[in-house]
Image (cartoon, rainbow, N blue to C red):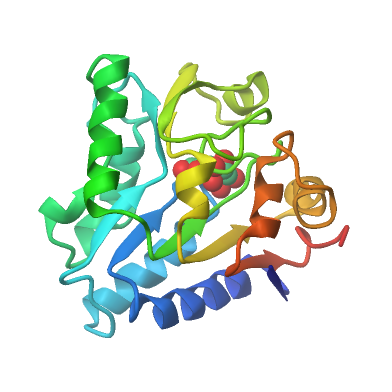
Length: 231
Ligand code: F6R
């Protein structure tokens, strides 16, 4: 695992963009995360794509997770977040966007996303954030190394930090995340420093799902100084 530390959120995002652009050339499948951390990265990607400097033509995407159940137009939905922050700004073919359909019953939601992943996965370049409790995607503490796409119950910590009333989600598992060729994890702010320390320096355990990334061959943590302060 490689660690890059930049002074602040803006410089962290610029560095992540540089790595993303580099690896976009060799990746036909892109994995996206939501949340506040990749906001600036997504706006950089949007601007560079509008300027014609990068392109998503011929590429497909998977998103890590979505609340369950939720309609795609709901203000809280991750699908809507992605539409507003990225998809509508880039030249990706809409049919190539893979997203959990969170309106089906549980088995059908999982089956469809697993089928799509088996057909079009694995991911080439995966963008990740990290939760305060060390989650990646919605793989909360207690997730197994071989966990796959599934419906999960969110931890109380995640529910309160995300200020949501949703208590469940569909997420890619640790297994699918670990199958990505290249992972770029972003973290910013002191509130992430403890989970970053446990992910990078702690032992590899399902109690800190991000610690599994220590065993991934091509992962880069891009941090700002505050997130890296305990390293
Ligand atoms: C969201 C996701 C989550 C977030 C994490 C950090 O798709 O996969 O694991 O990356 O909760 O969220 P922010 O960036 O809002 O701190």
